[in-house]
Image: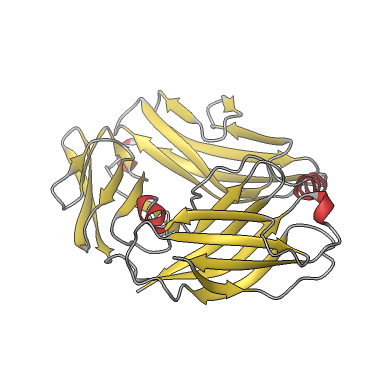
Length: 314
């Protein structure tokens, strides 16, 4: 299973220190290609092929170069290419980022004896597990098909190549993708075990960014839920730079499994001031509405930002 992380609030600004760190790390660059995946439409020519790279790299001065093995190239991140003739093609991807680069080559078989329809798929969710309601983004890795039928086993279906679907209630669903071309059909089925809503929230760690005028001063954080103090850190004295990370690893004691209008609050205190320097908050039902995000990001637009990583438990 592949997991994606989702934030509740879009980050507007980041601190100068974070930008400087990213700039310096990008000077040399870092590129590593792990794999190339392809999704092939049609069981005879012309073949429509979608390419994706599984790669690790930074973003500054990044260049993708795809060579499709038929004399054509592309600099797109995830290109689509049409092959008008049968054949075996060597597809090469070269990624460069400043002084770092990597290449990978795969063989693409587009011949009469290798174009049997093959159904395959995976999925991505916001949380680490499938909690109801579960919003699932389906990823289609089928080959040699011209049409698709997704059956979600909850009464809904889709003919979209890569649909998004929400399982509203817990249960085990036999989710199937039927890939088809000219009477040839392949079906791949997976049991989706959707668990009931989690009844516990765990705050793993909290990372704080503050303006430059806070450097050299003392800071601490507090976490409140439903008006009750859940966690209070010790002071970090004379902060030399930001961001600063607090390892929390605390369950919300006053959370009882009910996602409602109760506020989850993160407060940052500076020096001995009784009032927090900044306060970020959200209602617990925002977590439910956003399908249990594992990262919460807040930013006031003035250099004060906070990121909390959280987990859910039965």
